[in-house]
Length: 419
Image (cartoon, rainbow, N blue to C red; front, side, top):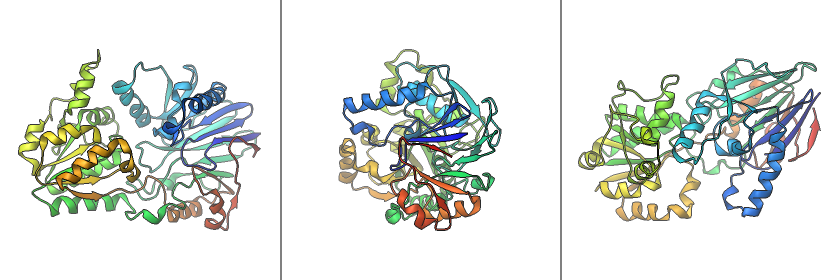
């Protein structure tokens, strides 16, 4: 017997948490925080964490599709004994930020998973992870099989068909009984101009070539490995050098032995710099000097960037405002390569005032980490599930119009349903 409870995600993007009860085993897929969690009152946060803690404590196993906070933000509530299944890049993307910014790293029972390698430790259940295309490197979908009833359910997680691994969905199992299908971009596509990571790459190349005497600042996530790969390739194409801070370099270093990332002495077009705020912060904390000394072969000073600005593409965050002021480039491009909504955050106001006052050219060069509607249609047509269950969407009521020939089972948060 297979039952499902979507604790959160039937009517919103983020905060995903799905519980499957199969042969008396309780499995949780993703344990995320809502996107607006930071705006909640302390009382609201406490009530929610208490509610979710009681659910998480009962889980026999937890499966994490990727490392974004709206899917992993409740990790601190997981008992140390509970097995947590997640990909190797997801483990590293959780551990490295914790090493930098965590107070005390809690021990977790992390169990690495691999593409199409079945997980059979849970009696009566088989789970097969599949690598999928998403802005989180190492993201996974999960096929869950009830071995007694032979029912199958596919959890897509966050998925797209326009990134660097856009054909990865072809490995997913077809004709499953149920597919939990994300719909982040349903109703949100009107502002999306850039439709693929390939277009993002071409835009970088065009900008760098169009302004040969300019320094290029790019605000991109240190955990968006595909975007960093694109930036590196664009630098190689245009004979520029990509400068990343030592937090980003630690992320790359942690992954390069097993994954395709730009790290190592053979990568001629990348350098590591040390932003004032982060360097001072790490030096104040005991036993973390190794994070600063992560590289010796590719250090670059901010003075070198200042004196040879046109050679460099610098990955930045708003917290690097003092470093940007020190470099004080006369001619520069500022490129947002991250979700545009972050630009509206009040805490970044002084950063954007500086960029505007300097008169830097501003560009937006980003594409979604989630499938567009045409991608969802292509995915559904290929996989041909018997039933689609909407999740990770604000527009579940539109699924019937988008997939007119499919059976749609629209659930509600917290409702226990027999499948």
